[in-house]
Structure formats: C-alpha cells, structure tokens
Length: 285
Image (cartoon, rainbow, N blue to C red; front, side, top):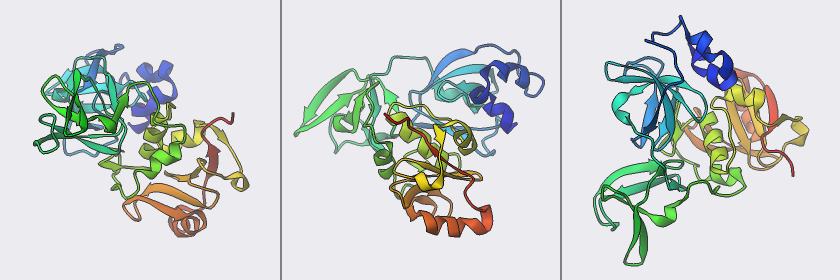
C-alpha cells in the first residue's frame, strides 16, 4: 500500500485508478475539503490507532476527505498528496488562516498572559486565525476566537517565508527528538525535516526521502557539495551545513544532530552502504 498511498505525489492522474480495487471506499471522488483542527495528527495506513504512522498533519493544513467510516476519515493531504487515515474528529471546516507558527514550538495560552494555563502546544508550520491583538507587561499576543492567545513574535502572517536560508531553519531543530513519520517540532524524521524547512522558506518538497532523491532540485557530484545540498542514503537524507558537516534527523542519536560528512559515511556504511546520491534542492540565482 505504500506506493498507493503516495501515488498522488508522483502521478495525480493515476492515483484514482490505482487505488480502486486496492482500498475499501464507498466511492472515488475529488473529496470533500476539510482542515486539520488539532495541533498534530498522525496519518496512518489503516483505520487503527495501533498501526504505525506514515506522516503527520499540522493544525490548519487542508485535506480532501475521500471516505468516512466508524469515526475515521480516509483523506488525501493537499500539501503533498499523501493518502491515509486519521480520526474524523480531528478535522473541521476550511477557514482562512491569518498566521503561521515560525518557531519550532510555541504555546497557546488560555488568555493574553504567559502566566495563564497552557491550552495546547503548536509546531512550526501550524496555521491559525487571529481575531485580534493585545499586550500584557510588554509582551504582544495574537488572540484566538476561543479566548486562547499566542506570543506574537513566535508567529508571522501566512504567505511570508521565514527566511531564504532553509538550513538556518533546520538548525533550529537541533536536539529535537527523532520520530519515524514525524513532521513537527515535537518529533521529526529526516525527510520531514527537509520538507518542513523548505516549506517555511516558501518552497514545496515531496514527503519521503526516495521522492526527494528522485525529484527535488538537481543531481550534483560529491565534490560540489556546499551549504544546503542534500546527501542521500537508502531511506535517509541529510542536509549539508557547509562543505564538510551536515544536519539530519537520525535514528543513531534519536535526535536532529550535527555530524561530519566523512564520519557519517563511515558510520552508516556498514548498514546502509555509501550515499546513493547528492542533490541541490534550490535553484541557483
């Protein structure tokens, strides 16, 4: 099913044909638009909370609901075409978000004061609608319709990239826990880190490392490596911080960590062989 769940990202024109007869659904349609209404939602291959996760969706991301049954929704993510199951209760109507979280993590307080109880925690990339602003003891807050409040300087208007250097965004995640299928500031995997950081600089990237290795940017030689280039192993991707060192979410340290390229090649080689390729994800200007 992995190929089927990702087919939308490769070939949207073939997705419906491939899925018919291979997954259970009442009908195959373009889907009903919906929006993620919880901070982080796991997307699973089966409607079963005991199954592993393929990826995650963040607050404010939009999806197409292809089917609903027994409290589960079978959806296609608008951002990268991933298909899977998530709890139906995690979805709500599509609304126009005004702001996006820019820091790896931030809190939603029960009011405009950092001493108030915390209602939720949001990841970088989460979007929401602010209904106003307020200031308490010199700290400015964005206000939500339900009375919640976020620190304003942790957020920015939707549509404006954080900065042009996506490696600087990745560096903010150092020591974030590694999570297979993770795509948030609370836990993230190697390709999720690349996808989220590029998204925050206004660029679109596939979700999985094999997709990134085959389609993101352009291939380069090892001798060309510089800041921002990608190094791929089978099932893994790392980002060069400079010509000799890299940052990656990895199962060795179980964190996002810095590591020398040569050290990584030697350490990873016994299990996953040498790198399978190198790519420059961002076009030169």
